[in-house]
Length: 447
Image 1 (cartoon, rainbow, N blue to C red):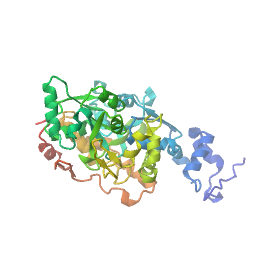
Image 2 (image 1 turned 45 degrees about the vertical axis):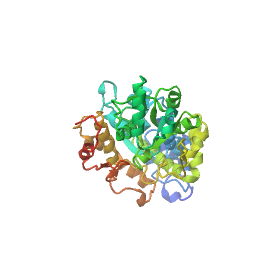
Image 3 (image 1 turned 135 degrees about the vertical axis):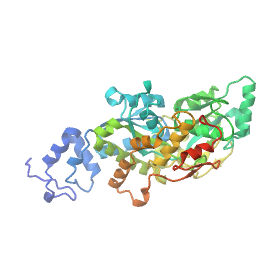
Image 4 (image 1 turned 90 degrees about the vertical axis):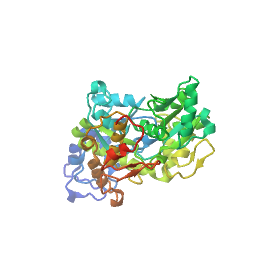
């Protein structure tokens, strides 16, 4: 074929000066000829822009980890719906991780060491890993947060032995029941998924609000999400905090009930993040941007009510969470049966993937997580949280991706802070004065 033959697809004509051969020269090495044309066709249904070759990602490869939870749905959807391919990332492996500890270890290794490049991850973890607080020999592995993945809809579940109490936001009755159990010589335990992670902080806040010291009055243990139900069944713990579908499955198996949706503690609270090794992003900025755009587009798709049942069925698949769809569908669509006779239709604190700025990584929220980890001794009281946030939080990349995706201005925050946050117990977190917030908390590890 002659070099003079021009691409004439859609809006691109001979006047654009893009020859088929020059387009291939710019991208074929990275994508492969067949994959290139498929990627171009999907990404630009109206025609191939002349600048496409220069915008090709530096690599088409990335390995992204996930834990079997419904808030990893944007990664599942991006893979299943071809969105990674659409943005030129034709060799993305979305790999299941056994636990958050495994996720951490594989992030430290990176894909070059047979680990992973990024992950669906508990929001505080990129900070704990970047600061070397949870890594071997306290050696830091710099991380970036590129986006948030969702708001709300983790849950705290309680064992069936406490069904008569129908424990909810008020944990004072639970405190009395735990004291009686301890007096009889039996251990009492609360399970979460990773020390200093979101589930750890939600269950600690909930327990402490009713006067239960999570380090003294109950033993706090680590259990991987997918093992929560089995451990509750054999009596390993009295309560746990985790994402879906494990809370719903607990009820379906008549082993326990939901005490609260964590959105009841803090409405529209941030939860998981899309985090990546800084080394990958710095080396492959275009590839990282392509991944981010794919994830954000998947978030928009996941958030539409008309897609929610399909999202649930995708999540339930064997390669992702591997559970019956019935364990996923109701709560994915906003219907919460707490297992106590309480049923909430159209929950205001259902999982949000895009609406209400769910995808945007507010720096003020990251400050709350670090402040809470200071509360419980994971960070030193005088740790420079804002300096760490400036390194890890890449909301600038989110804004760049939002612009490229033509996100309406109304859906893009004008500030990096969501402002003051008020919790169910009346406590207020002002990101301008986190110390004042800490001073109002009765149970904490710092003076």
